[in-house]
Image 1 (cartoon, one colour):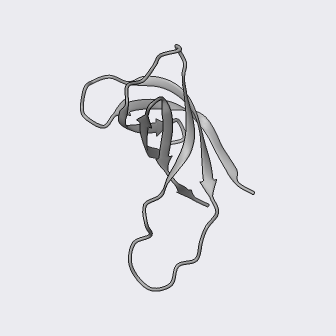
Image 2 (tube, one colour):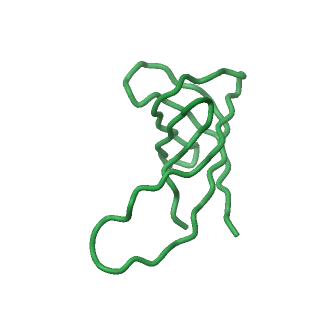
Length: 89
């Protein structure tokens, strides 16, 4: 069973453009997996949803989502579909 983090925030392109969008989002929380040994956990992209408060269409690219709760998430849009770096429980 997966949890889903929902909220609101500001979506900002990764390249400095001075543009930001007010959005609502939903991100699936991945179940925690045990890892043996040292090293970094592999990067895993998960599906997520982003909806603009003003029905805007976002160009493909990499974004940072500054959630109202203070967390920052990395997202990317490809062909109108959103992916985010997986959140660990």
